[in-house]
Image (tube, rainbow, N blue to C red; front, side, top):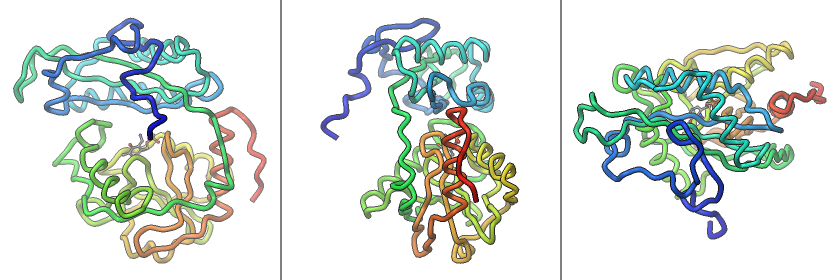
Length: 298
Ligand code: PMP
C-alpha cells in the first residue's frame, strides 16, 4: 500500500459546506457528533467518461438515508447533484469515484444531537474506467461472516448510514486475514443477505435469484443489473435465500457501484463457475455505464 497517497494528503479541491475548498484544508474537529455517534450517511458514485451514472438516484438515496436518521440536509437534491459534478470538474477527472458524506457537527457532544448543524462534503478521486473481463471472470472468493445484518427494527437498515459499516469492516478484515477477498453476510433470520459493500446475485437454470432487500441496502447497481437481465429475457426472482441453497446455484456475482458486476467463484464451502450469464451481464453493465452498446450475445 506504500504507493497509495493518504486521502487527507491529496491535491486539488473538494466541495465542503457549499463551496469548493483546497483539499488539504477540508478538516473537521475531533469533537464531531458524526465521528463519535455515527450520525453520518454517505453515497458512493462513479463518473464514467464525464457522466455520473444514475446521479439522481444516488442523490435521492443520500437524502432518504439522512431523512431516516432524522438529519436535515440544508441543500436541495439538485444543489447536491450539481455539487457532485462540480467536485469532479474541479479535479479535472472524467472517470472518478464520487463520495458525498453528510454528518452532524460539534454543537452538541452527547447522544442527543438536536442542536447540531448538518455538514456536507463531496470528494472525488480518479478511478480509471478500466475493464478487464478475463481477470474478472476468474471470480473472487468469499468467506461467510459471523456477523449478521441486523433487523430493520434494530438498525436503520434502509439507510446508507456510516454505523452500519462497523460490522462490514470487521467482516472484511476477518475474511482478508484468511486469504479471502470479501465476506458474505447472512441476515438476522439466517438468510443470505449481501457482501460487505455490494449486493449478491445467483444463477440457477437461466434464472437470476437475489435476496429481497428488506434488511440491507437496495443497491442501485443490483436494480440496473435486474433491468439488463430482463432486456435479455432472463427472469429475475427476488426472494429469501437460505445458505444451503447455494449448493444448487451455478453462477454467482456481486453487484455494486465499486464492484460493478464481479463474478464469485467460492463462498465458504460452496463453489460457482462464472459462466455465460455473469459474462453477459458484466459486459452489459460495463456498456450501460459508458452509454455504449453491449456486444455480447448469449
Ligand atoms: N450493499 C452495501 C453494504 C454497499 O455498501 C453497497 C455499495 N453502495 C451496495 C450494497 C450496493 O449498492 P449500489 O449498487 O447502490 O452501489
